[in-house]
Length: 127
Image (spheres, rainbow, N blue to C red):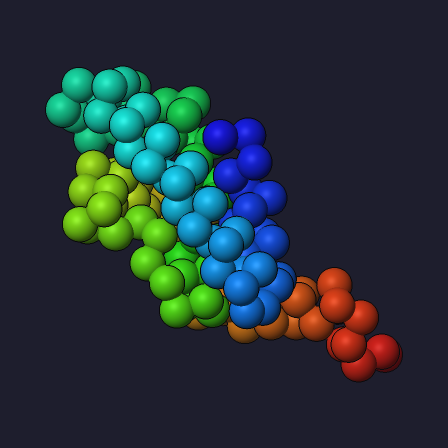
């Protein structure tokens, strides 16, 4: 579970089999989040129940990056079939009045991520 985000990052930055394995491992971490959400939420919208709480914010900080990774790697990580509760949570969290105006736009973040990846790989044009 602690390696979930590093796996997501590695999957995003890698290619081929290495990327596929890292993305699969991050998907396994999301299954743990699905299980945790089911236990903690007790059938309500958020991890702590009816209101956004600490765990929602902690995972919600990664939500836009998850969506960018899905787009960039052509995968579905938070999937209605595999993680139905997490899928619904992502929708409810991102649509919440306290979140919707501060969550980064996925398309803009995706384009920024391309620049970021090129910088991290040392191939970005220098100014």
